Length: 142
View 1 (cartoon, rainbow, N blue to C red):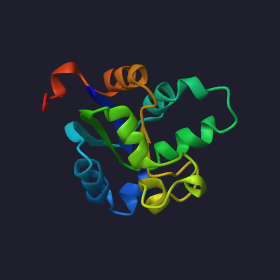
View 2: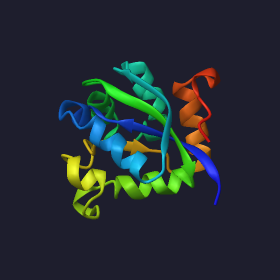
View 3: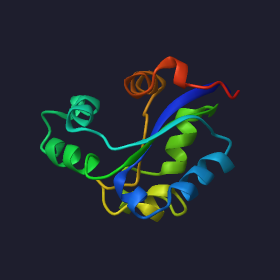
């Protein structure tokens, strides 16, 4: 096992539902620690840059619109095998396919408004964390 960092976003629909605390508790109760956090509203430019890999896909504009529709909570989570553990806690991207008790099963509205984002690999986590946080903002908690 290795201690690592991953990136997470609590998306606008989960913020609107006022379940940020419950989501963070789920991460913490499974051994992940918040080592940076920022509550913000993404600009169109920032959202487009973050989702640039999807720019040619039909859902890109809808996704950008959704992600800029309200505030989000950006977080760095750390812990043993943080990337895989975060993805397990979140559940499948499509909430209809997510396991019972996962964040997406419990709080998602649909595949786009699926409550949370989490890095899909250590490489993605590194890129995503650097996109939203300066190194000095990332606190070591391990």
